[in-house]
Image (cartoon, rainbow, N blue to C red; front, side, top):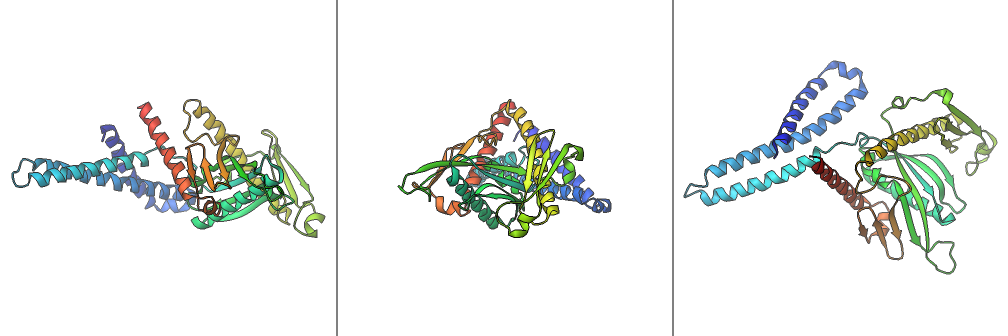
Length: 360
């Protein structure tokens, strides 16, 4: 292990002691947000120190074995012990390098998931509905909670646009690589001659702030329109102006909600979506500046970028960013996508390690 890495780990060890003292303070109980942040930092540092201590123990074992190699009776055993200790040290260094990679500050956050039908008309809207089902089933598998915030249904039962909120442990960390264009190749239900069609939809994964206050919006910069909702919901929905559209005038960003019978609740949901979209634009602008210096292996999360193809006749899903093809389309469309998301996370970690190696 490099001396600079040992020095950083010793600094982290000192920081863990500081965090332990802070967590024992009664004053912290008065600030729930800070308490959550320190608990999160404590968990990360504790995991890091566990592997650092394991490396230190393996290093001590290696030195002890090396001293006994010249012993005529213990020499062979000592060589084997030294080899095993060295291998253990290498494993711990790789784990520590991964754990010490720069953290995405949004990883622990909940998300707003937007799915929009693209090219392909009704078939695209149906595919957007299939994508929503896949993500909701995945959320169930992870024990996350989901809430429908906004939906514009198509005539055949799909969605022109749908927004759901996913809440749980490290939702953004798992879902952030899903942003982009998703293409489907299959025989649509509307196709009478059995021809394969290609259509697409776009997915945007927006991180939700720890609280609304992290994005400050001047009420004077908002235009709020109310109107009668359309679509399902019964007579009450269509007779009252319960639907809400909020426009942020400086950016032109718009959020709309008409799914609840209450105008007040629709306004709250629309504001929630608007804030997430404003934050997403801010984050993407910052990422654009960073990507001018370094191109990520798995892409930028740009929604115009085609990231994946779902080929139903061949039973495969291909992620074009990492050239991974899995012939498991049925279980994956039922929410079994951990293998794919794990591969994307591993590629991202490898990309970060490579970039750090270039800069060091």
